[in-house]
Amino acid sequence: MKGYPMRSNGRFALLLLAILLAVPAQSWAFGYGDSQGNGTVLPGIHPASLSLAGARAVGLGDAASVMLNPADIYRVPGRVLNISAGAAIVSEVVEDTTGKYNRNYAALGNVCAAAKLQLSPGLAAALGIARLSDFTYEGIRYLTEDPLEPDRITGAESLQSSGGLWEACAGSAYKVGPLVAGASAGIRFGSADYTFTVTDYDENTETDSTWSRSFDSQGCFHLGVMLPFELNRLGISYASETDQYADRLALGGLIYTGSSNLGAFGGELEIADLGGDTEYTGRAFGQYSPSSSFTFRLGIFITERPEMTDAEKIGLALGGVIGLGAVNLDFGYSWTREERMTDIFANPTGGYYVSDKPSMISVGMTWTGGQ
Picture 1 (cartoon, helix red, strand yellow):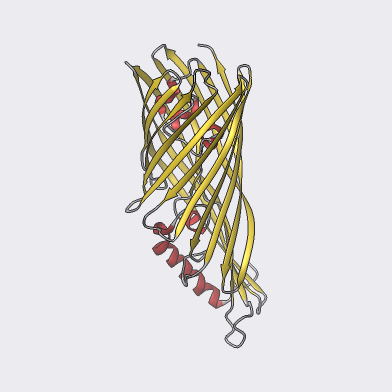
Picture 2 (tube, rainbow, N blue to C red):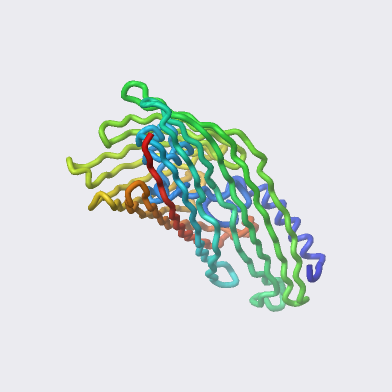
């Protein structure tokens, strides 16, 4: 701490009050709102889901499906191991009365490890751990508080945060006639750390205030149903609610084209209940396999929240798989754009333009073995 101006105390107290009153209804996408609210839900927990625009109901038969659609852990026979990690770079553009600013900051992306066993011809089990949401944010707001020189910047307020929400669970899938049903259960846990800094350029002082949030472990569960017909499939999945994570219902399908199975296309609709507000996400995706050792994937998604009419969010995704025998190398990339009219902090004045454009990359490996 380099100083402690009295007006910094008051400004900080007002900011905290605004956080408590305003943020829960405003959180969306990477940025200040999500860092203070329930975090930014990552657009996929591993490279495969990331490259399919965050698909949840339509799985890939891997072990990580125990945290998406648990019914789909059955579809690929044998033992499966998934390991992956990723990172994000967020570009934020802010335009307010003091000017237009562009900044970038880095965040940890998805991290996932999962394993699956084939217990019998009709029964499979899996367990896994994955990072679901991110609380990273770096923002600054410049202040003009000299009435004699209204255009002169006299100080700044900045916020840095980090942290994440994780899930660990185990489950099983069982084939019942033409259907496969699955269920999993576990806990969600995590934490977030914050540093709020007030800088007074006239007094040459800087005040740091820090605090943390700990997300106590809470039970969660997933339910899923899959209807496979040859390689094609229809799926529906449900994820339960916890304090920092909304419950989510997703349904969709994937259809292969032609007898060669080189290409496939599909789509999903996901509905999230945000406690008085509903978020709708539509996804369209496809894949193409020019050879048995390579598959390319492409996806797009659009998210709408009727309660936030002044914002829009779209995203693109791509990725694929390189086959090396029993081991596949997986990669995925996602880019999202969200634009809104708000302040970067708790919207005390309004009329600001903010654009967040996070890019996320994820890489990993999938090992598949026999019984």
